[in-house]
Length: 191
Image (tube, rainbow, N blue to C red; front, top):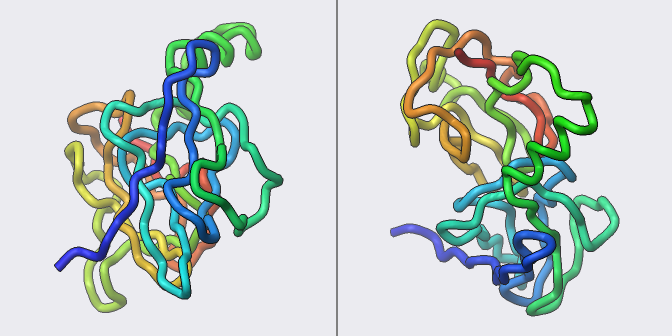
């Protein structure tokens, strides 16, 4: 049986793209970093009465975190409907990044799968198991590449998201078992 999950309340904003709001009262954990690319799926935890409930973005919601509504803390007490962050559509975010960097050739940075949340990264399902992926492996969309532990809850990190190809070859895994990662950190590099 799968544990219960919540879905962020999301409203379209013609100027900002998406406004993402809390689906319930509680303590929000796994706050993303400005500039992190988020898509439908796991985007943090809401703690209520000691229970850790995964919170997901609904299908069709894709964008780059452009404005956090709170200070950058690991945990924030939230109310139902409270604005948490905004997502800028990808095309607008790409244009802003190109303008900020002066254009130029795409770099290897664009071919990295990034952590969806803060936590502790694990490359294997258990200590005695082989890693999910290793350099030279070919991965496909939706395939697990590791785990991130947030508040004693282990969440699969999948090879998916906007802009990710259907399949790719892993060049390097950039983090080790037990490394602390922040939302937006590069986990692996691929071709």
